[in-house]
Amino acid sequence: MPFSTELKSRSKQVLREFQASDTFQGIFHSRTDPEFIRVVIRRVLFEVATYGPFITSASFTAIGRLCHQWPRVEALAMHLSEEARHPQLAMDGFLLLGGDHDEAAECKLSPAAFAVAAVCEQCGRSGHPAGYLGFMYLMEFTTITLATQARKLLASANLQILHVDMHSKVDIEHVALLDTEINALVESLPETRSAILDGFDRFAAVYPLPLWKFAYETARGELECQRQPTA
Ligand SMILES: [Fe+2]
Image 1 (tube, rainbow, N blue to C red):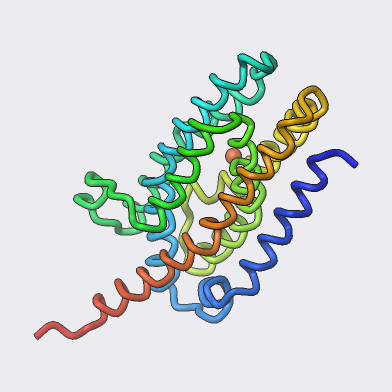
Image 2: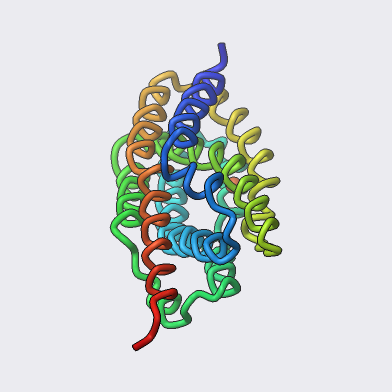
């Protein structure tokens, strides 16, 4: 069995657990209020925009370290270069959905986004560099479903955001690319298998549920404040 089949199966399990959570149900199933949809997706986009640059830099560092052992990194570097501008696109989406310009300029990591960034930084900069492929795989795989769900949710509120539209399609290709590259890497360097699984498990501890749960709860608080009558 190719190693990517195992990664895919583990990713599906993480996704199933998230889909069974109150957070997922609360965001995608139990509410149809267009204002709630705008505020919650806006908050998720802000989180993506703040942790995204750390994922990119940690992954580029990992690729730089990896090429000492495995020079075939062109496709991985190409994939990452396609990811590089996504945090800015997410921030554009945050602003389009009415996000605050000062908050965007400050770009402060929430505790949940900090945890995501910290795991990726650690995996990218220390230990075996192949560990980055574990967190990257889980992120890309889950994004296919989460972006598709978010796109439908936004459409139900007559909203459309480029970052979300794009990810519901482009990450199908990115996962296929990672399948090929990861299988080749593990075949060539079998010791990378455990490093990739470590990166996967560490990322699964902070994403997707903890990050989305934080965004969901923050959005509910924002909406409550917004709806409080002014004195
Ligand atoms: Fe991607």
